[in-house]
Image (cartoon, rainbow, N blue to C red):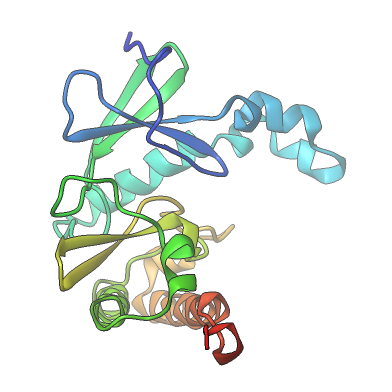
Length: 211
């Protein structure tokens, strides 16, 4: 049993709390927030959503399943998605253990939702283009590419890299994109178009510029 109570999380998202692994500062342990556990979500579900059952609301199970699918594909490119080191029982529930990404100064990278309102820089623009090329080349399947789920890792002052830290896996009820490359390509393109729209919305407009 891994003890996390009393440790300050370095990040809190819409679903999970993220901790530096107490035994290895190169690893991250992600646990569900108390209000986002399968039990809590099922309790507040209404209508047909209650038919999903507890497993249908378990985001930890879904992410571990997505990582297993990557393993079955023989996935080796972990530049834009953290390598998963499995699951561990913690005093705060089931934890998913992944590689922990830091910037060249050893700091925790901000996400795109935090960075983009400050404007587009050349290193960030290059990182976004590299990220999209990777999605297309490797046919990486994800849920919606939300800016707050993608961190901008500064590997050097002028070299950034995007890493998707949440929302991996195929969200299709019938996972045809896992079976057919043509379906996967179409799905990736749809996700990229929506991602580009979200990026544009977050960027400052000329009216936001300080005179």
